[in-house]
Length: 624
Image (cartoon, rainbow, N blue to C red; front, side, top):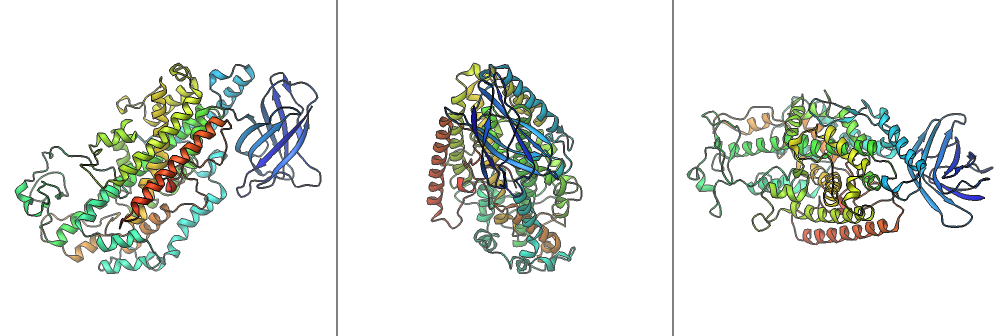
């Protein structure tokens, strides 16, 4: 019996191989001979190639359960990225075997065909053993580690090269990331300021010098209007940290402000809407700053609030609640869900590069003496403390977007209009929920199928123990027993890795590049009495020239999309081969396109368009 075998090699840099590659078919009744995939006088398995071979099987091996690919050294070792293999028997339809893996050194991998199967769907002992072996191998290389006490556990790898090859950044991503960061200083003409650490800016016009190489509509608008109270408030609605505020039904006892104190600056007969207090304990040395104070007093007070907000945004909203939590889901997925499981296929596009980018951050950004220490006031260990404190208040409800909005009391569009982050993200949540519901219902026929899925339950437990540190007060489920609960949980994972990360990441240059608006650090203490602040004190409070340039370069690099970015709903790697899932994907993309159109229509007439939660600008995963 002669099978036609087609092998597709990846398009990444250096994804082809000159090594020997052997194929073995494993059936329910036996195995084929080990066959060398080679065409005479032809360079096989090169980057982007799709090669065909004839494989002869002498004996009846029954139904093909999986196939083995083995790479062996020829002259020197190299790496090969296999996208997929198709196998066509003499009669009948072809089977597609999705791979999407790197095969390194002398290595053998086993691949199931593309049909997704729950554990209960595999009755053959060969198939059951394959699932078991795959997870055993994965658990040896995807190990948990505590990077800092109290943090969610992360991957056990100190540097990027120690990561499993399949989750390392590909060559293009590495080049782009390095370029965006190492070249940004030169591209933005900041070199002349880098050796000017400890040198203060003279005034706001002096700060504008570092924007000579930049053209950005939002940041330019912000530079013109940042001192206005409207713009100060607007940023809490639709800036980089639109999750920090909540409805206040009662003023805290330690906020001793009366309506009479602020009645001259209240609008629309509202009460206590614009006060700022820089320190938490009332007292004569902790004055409450008001819009009626001197311009410099009020301006510096707002700058302190924005600087504090920036620390929370970077460490809690961004680092902890998108990066670190998404890494937990990624590691648990690799450890507990085999490649044939439908939930592995569903989730894997949404954890792409997450483990790698977080490892790079632990190497260079948030480590001791890393970039965080160089430019942020919460560096030097402060960022670690903020994450540890936030972990104690982390709840499952706060990750489920509709519930999070209700918890903060900001769900009403009538009471709180122009909250574009809420309005757009709710649309995206509903689209993701619809897609996940369609996929889950294809494979789980009832709640019992969910409850008896031992691989799913192990995944949930791994997340709970290592991500949430087994904290029952978090409300994170340790197991799942219904389709409805599972659907919400998976929606939460995908939404957080895509829409939520995009909303709090890609606006960083827009809103944080103008240093006076969002100072990453403040060098002088807040004033203890009113009327003492002048321009000199403000300039001495702001970051010096060198640190300002580090900050500007960082927010620029972090806000860049990659040339090969995969946006929400784009699934070029076909892990799923079944038609019902492909139809669900197409329906998902149609819904996302409709949301994109609605957002674009609204933005047409806006001076400050909001597009961070527009699906055409939402990458599938946390990858920067």
